Length: 304
Ligand SMILES: Cc1cc2nc3c(=O)[nH]c(=O)nc-3n(C[C@H](O)[C@H](O)[C@H](O)COP(=O)(O)OP(=O)(O)OC[C@H]3O[C@@H](n4cnc5c(N)ncnc54)[C@H](O)[C@@H]3O)c2cc1C
Image (cartoon, helix red, strand yellow):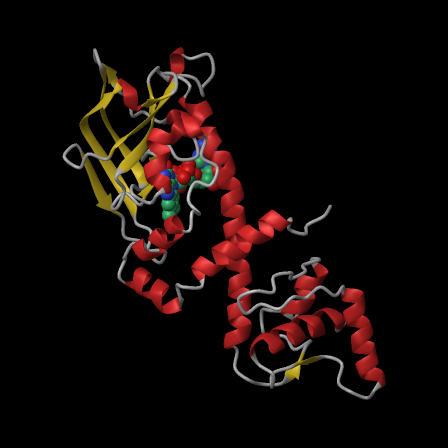
């Protein structure tokens, strides 16, 4: 399988990196410590055209203001008694002539403090009356009317730039035009959002992991020690663990180093160093930063 990025993916990667480069650690620390929504970052992403790149034209009414960064939306699916078991949610709108009236509770709703709109998954037919548990659910996209919806912040440790909330909905009117698609098919529609989100979250986790590794190498104190040096509880050097797992680091940008050589090449390099009477397994503490990164990983992998 070819894991190299296509030209288009490289262009996206570089474009997003350019925007992100304008927001340093101090900015994110301030957001997290003060529980401040990163609105400048959001604006920069919107101005760069990175929100909603794949907007289908027919959804322009709802998506255009989101893409332009003029509106923010939150996602109201989880409930106090329905987490992973989404089909057990109980928030049920009552039918009226021109729409629905809704009472209920949502839980963990991210960005509810700053959102203008809310996407609500509800149950319009009791589960017991449905052929399949995923039937009978209806999706709405509506104004987050704070006179009818109370959004209470949940205190949490870390990740505070993105607020998490308990949401109390009290007699909210939902006009028919705010219903997404057909009644009873909401679960099917929500999967259109959840499936890409899985890819998004996986990419996020890989990015956070790479950054954490890059930071830890950059921040480490200057010192020289054998590559097979092990801390209590950490039996193998990081590079060897990563190498054994087949990890290759290909991102050359933003302080990273393009490491494209295969472990065999690193092993030969180690052997050449050894033959020349130079230490084979040395983390290059003197070099620091990116060089330590490169040598640390190479030495770790080669140092069998
Ligand atoms: C920071 C944060 C942000 C979030 N943002 C949003 C958001 O914006 N919008 C939104 O709708 N939701 C959001 N969520 C909610 C998130 O989607 C849910 O946490 C998730 O769906 C899991 O639900 P739960 O926490 O109720 O866990 P549960 O469903 O209770 O599951 C917890 C664990 O128990 C296990 N389990 C559950 N039931 C059983 C059983 N019967 N038998 C055996 N094992 C069981 C599960 O497999 C799981 O491992 C957010 C959550 C967090 C923490």
